[in-house]
Image (cartoon, rainbow, N blue to C red; front, side, top):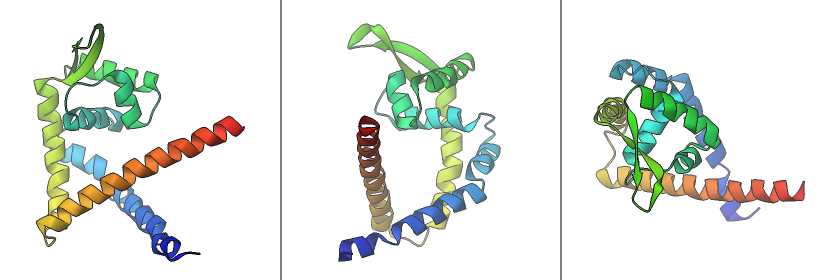
Length: 162
């Protein structure tokens, strides 16, 4: 085992503990209740994805970011459209296609939800420096992207072999 391997040995237990903390603490359920949000987790996930995107997204991109099949995202989006939280807008690059964007009501709802969650994170990390907080977000984001990409390629390789 190399020293790099040894350095990573603690990663899975830490990530497992984080996942357990978020699940056990019922972060989603408590945050939606505190924010007055009555949507299920997949719908809130879509609103968060749209809120953090640089602009409107295609359904396929939303599904990709959720790591679900397109029809699942489409069903969720239909419900969000019916509630007036998202809307379809023309794709400036392809007038036949439609993109999904938040409505004003959708933005208000996701802002309330994120305000609660971000408030909890800020409280938990209140003794951290601004630089440490930025580094955490940057490095954790980088790890998630790289791990997702790597796992997608491993699964693709396994599927090709089988």
